[in-house]
Length: 323
Image (tube, rainbow, N blue to C red; front, side, top):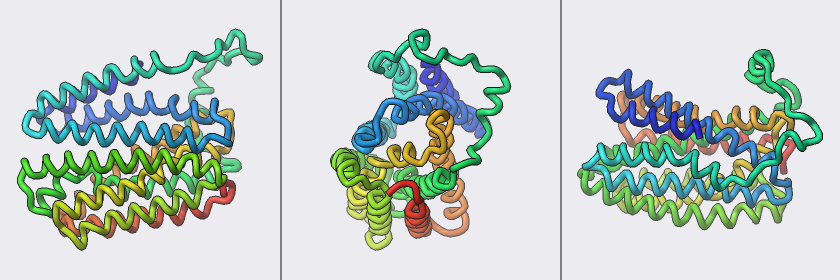
């Protein structure tokens, strides 16, 4: 609940800041709040879901993320000429997110009734929690790097759709908003369908890596389409093809991450570290895109994104612990 309120406050600060420092400060607060909500949510996948159905529940988790991203893009496009109202809507949604999550979250057992009494955390315990895993962690770090590379490649295009449509495709603001709305609907449909199918298939086959690899290759193919078709249609095809690959990938992503945890006792902490791949990937993508656009053009973004996605898939395939 606190994470939701902190995210809303940071969002409002960023939205109402005309200076770069205020925008950066506000968005940094947003990241703190968002990760306060995400970390315990992903830990539940390890605590409560057995390995035999982990892919299916990972698909539900990924599906919700997909719907949120696509719906957010669609809503954002509607506010393209009324940004103040859009920012306010976003802040309200953030503020109530934590409350809604707590209301629908299944009640947990009281620690008083548990066989092991809840441990009181000391300052030293909290400081030790910042120590990265050092034992039985090869696959853990491969999963971290692979996910990071894929998120960088995905975010380089997905985050900059508006500017790509305007600067690369050559559309007006109104035309870009219409195309983004269409792209978000396409993405949401294919992402939901593919993620809901891929999760159960992963559980049935007892395979994670090959599904991640297939999803990554399809994402790369989707990103390549605008290179050959720098048009609105090309971007819509990108949304459909890359969205299909991302749906396949995200369906088993969290299941794979749980499978490579070095210690189940520190699942929350370690999954929080793995979640950094999302956050850091979304930070690195603008840095790379900014440098590319400043020295080259938007056309150069696509091949770099493809390389990141494919190298990430190769890294994932090097994992030994998971089939």
